Image 1: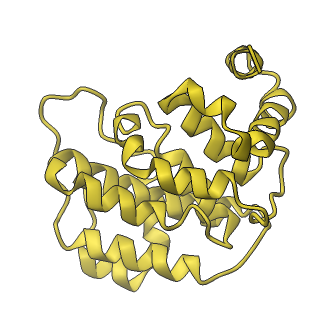
Image 2: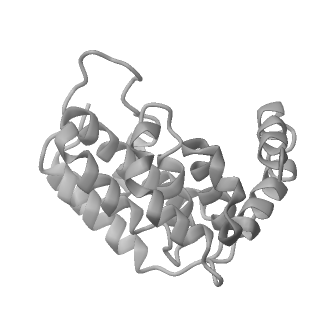
Length: 195
């Protein structure tokens, strides 16, 4: 299933092969990734972080998601590494590469990884309250996405005054970018309740 570390190091485009390979939720036995792949995934993400862009790039996003998926396997195989892995991924929330920022924040919405989002709640708050966020090419902003993850951690975040803009951007994104989905509309109504 896993490619050799040499292959991934030589051709980073091979990360796209992992874009749909998430470890199954609640699986009692998860295959472990080759340990040498983890630093290569981090190197790839760090190099991607150096490429500033506010343009959505589907090809780049697939590679980023593939590298993050490899790290999801690592977290599931080595839960003792979960805190440090999550904190490291959290450093990409404010990336000037919009594709990396979106993918890193979205990583914590994967159902069986959501349990780790508490490890990065302060990093999410920092992004959601940032006055100069990475510009977004779609209606859902980086701040809005960060707020969505925070709201799923604790609905009380909707009352934080420093997150008001992020909350509004999240609702706007849910109703425009994701408005055709009833779950998004329902989440928007929940966020706006009692605010």
